[in-house]
Picture 1 (tube, helix red, strand yellow):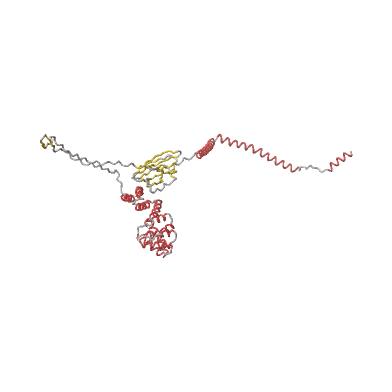
Picture 2 (cartoon, helix red, strand yellow):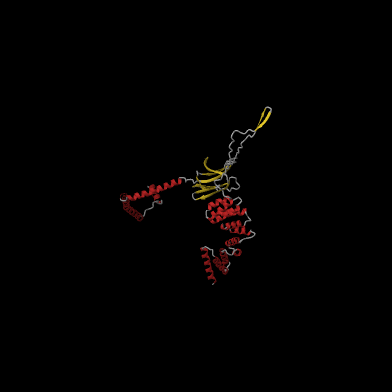
Length: 445
């Protein structure tokens, strides 16, 4: 008993590890859980029924909606696939001229144009020693080489057109031109071959032959001891003498009568007046590097100026000035080309190096200074230009503009009024001058 009592006492003395559960807390948690379960049990069957009803309605009563959706999906997928096909398919290669080789031998010369594909070409224009071939649907990655002092070619030019390229070739006289197209390994070569024409057949001059008849007049007869001289007349009838034939003259005339250089120059001037730029250019380029080189370059500058070809005008003006640096005409042309390219400082430096300036050069200097906002120098050179030639209304307008910037309003107004009196102005300049004049009068009054 004592042992049992001791064990019971030991159990009573140990601390209990049991934590009692509060009745109130337990009951409230169970209640909330039960409520949520009740709500879900009510809502879940309703949600399932509603979803099934919507699906049933879409399938049974509105099949066209499903068809539209399917069509949209199919079309969009087709679009994506077609786009993938387009991107995966390589773009067609554009035919291009990628290179030019010139092969020259003793007897011929060949211009070989390298291309991606075969070229579609035809002879566009043919005149004396000039050929224009057109290559359809082709681009060029090269520039035509500059050819000087060649015994075959005078000029070669590539010009880009809307539908392809023009190959402009001018040869020296007496050259036969052929074109061919071959494939060399992986390259397509379009070739222009030049050969010397054979010498013309010379016709020998026929000489007249006059036949002189031979007539025996006397015979000497010896008989024994006596020698008698007897005149024996010809018993035969004399030969009829034919009148001598006149020499046959063979005269060969050329079917194409070539014009002289001076006639070609005059013809080119007429073509410029008629605005036939291309034909005039061919004639003038053929006269370059010859006795009429200066005049040909001069008329070409007129042609490019009137046709509005500023690119060729600039190139020709620069080359002509470098070849003839002492010629005032080409100095003025090059200065005008620099001004058109907005290279005002270069134009000023070029004209300042001249020993003496004319009215046009002074006006170009003044306009260049005006573009550089150096109006005092512009006024000075406008005065020089008008002192040499006071009839140029445009120079009076330029002077008025620079005088306005120099705050010399009264003199500016006088310059504008002088320009109006001289006339020869287009409508735009007339409106400008009248507008500036009205403005200056208001400010001055």
